[in-house]
Image (cartoon, rainbow, N blue to C red; front, side, top):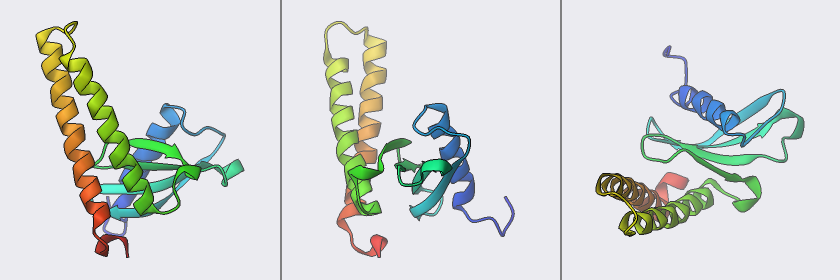
Length: 138
């Protein structure tokens, strides 16, 4: 990365590739715009098929985030997006914890699922804490 390349460019490029790979966006050309971020830690972006920019998705990625996406209609501001993902990840972690605690899991798999659940909870709580502060969103 050159000094003139913004910090978010590699993260945004990787995010677009992941969104295409999982089928979150499709089309001949896909574009994205960074909307909010904390340098090298978290990035919230809008991603869309260039033929239909009004049908964008919100996507999040980074060291302090689970790479994830939602339809653009589900949130208005980047702060709302962060809140949504925080709640979503909490629910995902709860579901993982339930699976880990079920009797049908082998011990090693259960421990792995529990570790994943704890990590998701930590990310969700950190993201939610961030949404409660005003200064990052100005």
